[in-house]
Length: 400
Image (cartoon, rainbow, N blue to C red; front, top):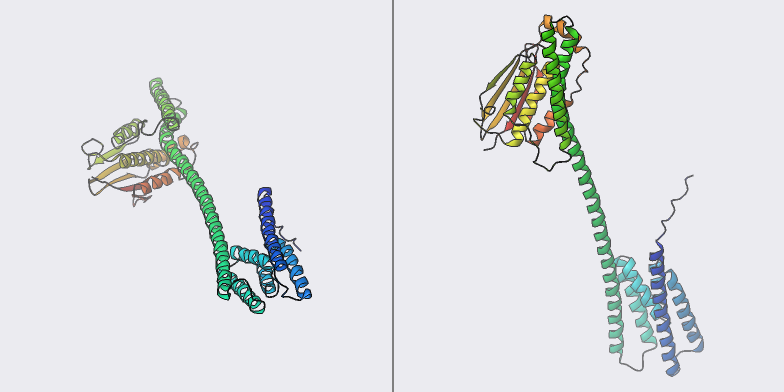
């Protein structure tokens, strides 16, 4: 059988404050009881001796019972209120108990205890009326005293509820701020991962192609080997520069680093052609020549899409011709389509040895492109063509 969950302990400061408040209220009740005793001793004898003894004993027990007022507020409140019907010295303890009910219990319970107390004090005044003041004055003082006690207790309860609500809101705001910071950090890591994949993946695929050519064509003329080695050296140098730029994103202020745009597509096409890929570019929108200018975010997304598509074509369909087609107009949209034909059978056999050591694609690049497209309210589609090749289509809004 599982053990009961232990009640959480209060902090030492709160426990000390609670005890001080309880002691102060009990002291007030005792003081009111002593005042009542003083008044009884100065007045002519109205009550029998046994009732005076019961009155004083009830007042003493009522003051002692207040120590448990927080645990049983309604029960103690009703008991002390009912005792006020025959005991004048318990009146102070009954008022403190009513005050406690107003703080810690519902308004319905407070009204009930208040009604019992008013009825009990009315009975006492009817049985042993005050000889020093008119009845109207006495009942008015009793009613106003109870109203003030209940109002004070309700105000304390509402203030505590407000403080608790503000504390909960502050904690919720702190948690929300922490979640926003974690989300921003995660988005920053994802953006950096996309940049590293797009930049380094493209450059390293060129290195892999030329290094594979060197490993495969061992009997090639020295001039061809030298040119291939020079291409490998140049692309390795560029890969290192690209890596430094990406790492610089972590250090440089926003907007200080150069980012790719639509005009960089021409350079990507030239690099692919230099690597041996037949690339045909059709730019009906005029964004690669500078005739029309795409916004920075759309231009960067278009450039990364062409870069990733050329890289995938080089890895998965070596030797196959690639077509890059860009259409669109300002105020409407810009669309780019990159399609490659299936590699020829002879080319596939010749490039098998070069591509055997290349890792299988994980789809990270296409997922990154889809994320980029969503950031600018675009759409990315990809899939096989009717001829057995592969195509990637990107459609982006082109605001004026």
